Image (spheres, rainbow, N blue to C red):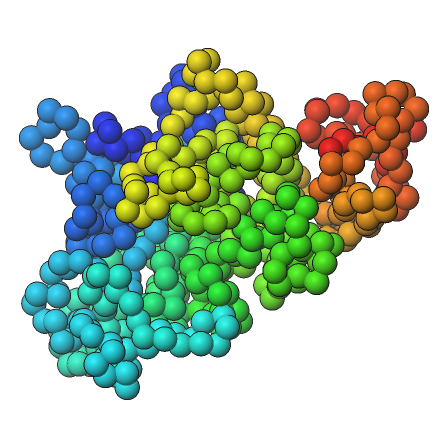
Length: 500
């Protein structure tokens, strides 16, 4: 599972993931085992996310140019960051932007071979259209103000990979060189491929993925580790929100971002039915088991509550989205229960684990592109700022999420796809669903109440809510209530009270 965002401290202008000895929400305190960085390659635009790459072979100098230094130290700082992460058992993934670039060198050296300027002027050009989206559509590629790369046009030219003159697709070879540089020199552990449909070439995507696995396997073998396990540790993940599952079926990519999870979980915690679900139970089933929407296994789905694109309705940070709803803390905790017990690989936008909020927003509570979406940093001080009236709540949420992360990364039941919904109760306005993860001899069971209804006199020893199909207790074992870190006496198993 990963935590992702622009969590680098740009104010100090160096790579910083966590500071030892402080109470922050870095990887060690939260317990996550992977970090994904927004595009760290050198970007044309200053002090934003890095989605307009100018120099693919170098990390952005702004990320390693400490005040007082005469020259940047970005490369050595990135190497130090990756080493620190690996020392803590944390893998490092990087976001790569290959559909387009801004003022990239080959744009000026040999534009016709590397780039396409105006796809609308020749829709029949093999590089003019996007690849097939999950809904079956294709449209003209969009460089969003930058210059699109060609991935279909072949020319005879110098190949930087083999060192020979031969028929090549120049932009592909540039990106293979890019990947080789980052895998060999910076020791990255995986890739998030931005805007797969706008890269617009599945053959290239598959070749890029295979090269990444090959480079990682070679590094794995150099370290004398078991080569058969190398593919389990390196992932190439695609971002295309319409979910073109054929990319997975044809093994062009290892996994896809599952934006449907974001849609379903935000509907569920408000007691709503998602637009493409037939009823509320269907919404929750699709939320918890990604196989119900087309993924073959949980290893193919990257589930998240919030992405870095926090603009617009139901995309904003959870704290902001829930500002007008009751029981905000409970709804946020329920959201993380769903994320960390669902089939799929959970990913957390930095700051959500302690209910960070937007500071740059409009009258709707949304952060816009023009309003500073890319420069609204995570404010880790909210965890320790006692003048913030929400600080106690944020601390409770952080401890709650850390407890769930520990469960997720340690319990074998959450490492397999096995999922059964063993109880659904919509009587008298309730919305209670119970799902079991893992095998019967070592399961995790989740009792989720998506309504405001609760057990009457819940504090009474006799108060109870019965789950009739609760699994039998394995011999010699005892149930544990994870949220409260307590053991459950056998006589109360499956019959404790529920709360809003």
